[in-house]
Structures are given as C-alpha cells and as structure tokens.
Length: 403
Image (cartoon, rainbow, N blue to C red; front, side, top):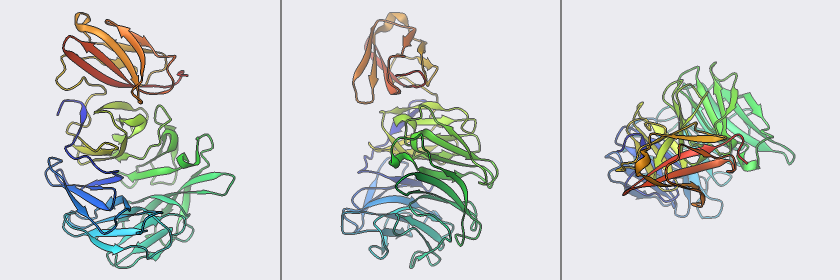
C-alpha cells in the first residue's frame, strides 16, 4: 500500500450500505440483493452468502461478539420487508430471523449490547423494537422515542442513544434521545430544525458514536458535526468543510482522532473535530462508512467497493502510486489561492483541475506554484500534474469564497 492512501480492495460490492470489522482480517459487508459478504484475509479474497431476501437490501450490520452478528434491511417494493438475519459463525453463514412480520418496510439500523439483547430501528411504521432472546422475538419499546430512527448507539447495557427525525408538513426536526433503562424510556438531549440545510433528506443525523462514557460524536446532512463531552447531555455543533456533504460515515479511535466521509472522499481530524484534513482515496470514490480497527488499520465502503488503510490514511495528499512526481497542497480546504509545493519545475509539463463529474475546469501549461480557485464553484476537485512519463493526482476542496 502506498503511503498515505486508502486503497481499493479486491472486492467490488453491489450497492454496499454498512460494514463491520470483527478483527484485522475479518470484515462483513452488507450488500445488495439480499447478500452478505465476508473476507477472512484482510480483503485479499471475499465470499458472498445469499440469503432468501432477494431484491431486498441489508442496510446495517452489528456484531456483539466475534462470532455472533445481526443484519437488518428490507425494501418498499420487493417481497421481503423488515428483514433480519443472524450469524453465529462470524458471518460465514446466515439464518433468517424474520421478514414481513412487523409494520413498515425497512429496518435501518441494528445494535446489540450482548448476544441476546439488542435493538432494531425501522421507518415511521415500525419504530424501535427490542429483543432479549437473541432475535427470536422483537417487541416495541421506547416511551417517548420519536419515529424515523436513523441510528442507534449503546455505551453500556443500560445507557444508549438514538437519532431520529420527523416532518409535520411545515418543519423537519432532527433529535438525539437518551435512555438510561435499556430503552424503557427516553429523553431528548438535542433537537434542531436544521433550517439552513437544503432538502428534507439531508435534515438528519445519520450516525452517532461514543468512544467512552463522556465523549460522543454525530454527523448528518450538509456537513453537520456534533460533539458531546458530558455523556450526551449537551452537544456542540459545527460543520465539516466544505459543508455540502451528507455525512454518513463516522468513526473515532479516541476523543481526538476520527474520520468521516466529507466531499466524496474521507477526512480525518486529530483535534476532536475542530479541524479536518482530506485524505487520499485511490481511486477517488464516494465513501459511505468507515471503521478503524486500530489507530492505523481501517476499512471503508464506497460506491465502488471496499477500501483499506494501514497507516491511518497517511498524509493529507499523496501522489499516484508509482509516480515520480511528488507535491503537496495548502491550504486545503481552500477559498482563494491554492499553493503547490515540492514539484520539480523541469519535469512538469501540464496541470489540470477536474471536478467530480470528470470535467476539466482549468488547464495550466508548465509548472505553477499556485492556482487561483475563486472562480470555481464550491466542491471537491482533483489536481492532475503531468510530467515526463509520470502523473500525480491530489484532491482538494474549494469552500468559502467559491462561487
């Protein structure tokens, strides 16, 4: 693996939605068309298990132990709705627990506090349900919990959180709610109409995670980033640049170091979310979920497949693997002038700035130390530097004064 890069693994998924890494080598991916996919060698080879839920999608997966795991999903159009499957052999085989047994269409998240006790969250019709018998039966729970739950997170067997949203025809409100009695009752600890966010589909908190009893994080639409340092009672809100991404990936390895999926790639913070640095994803792809096993080793799923890093994503920007061209960009994100350092003037023939649609936005002949990006719309771009028998790419984000 080239230094500083998330590299595409050998398996290309079919509409992946979630992943869970039981250890450094064992990773399970929820796949399209009722499939669950697993690797036992750190992404070298992959095998798929086909459940009976054809034309349904698994949306979430969670393993309370290395052997026992649960996956949930469904569809609004196919035969199988509100599906749950269970494995007891680390994801090698899966047993059908239920489908079409509860109101609604899709179970969107699942979380178990141990092998037997867990929660599954559905759409407006099914809400939050709980099992205490390993998934043999589920019953509605949650006095005061709101419908349309997006994510579940428990930090002890009693204390947990859900994120949800509701729309009354006039305003959309997203909330974080907290329980101290394993889901028996809930109190709202965060509420926001997210009125400045464009589109109802983005006015949601999509993921929530705690690294200990006090420090927790959440992400949502239009770059929304939330942090608590008092066990979830109070949340501070900020934006991950450029502020236009619908954040769905969230993984912190400590109270300071974490990852999310901003602007079609992966960004990392080393100061608890106060600042974020863009990481190199090769090839560039839209990340959906990230999970780190250690400070250095992690996996991510994108529209194109499964990516892996062995060095925490490395530096902010890295040349193409095997390239003799090396350079770095700053500031990144940028609003006015993007500075380029480290290039050999005698080996650089041409520079191109390309947007996420593959359109060439700027062309510069020869070597340049800086680029004026004020005329570029806000978004993510790739700077391609071409030289003698070599090519290098780096991603940057235009924000602030971009038009």
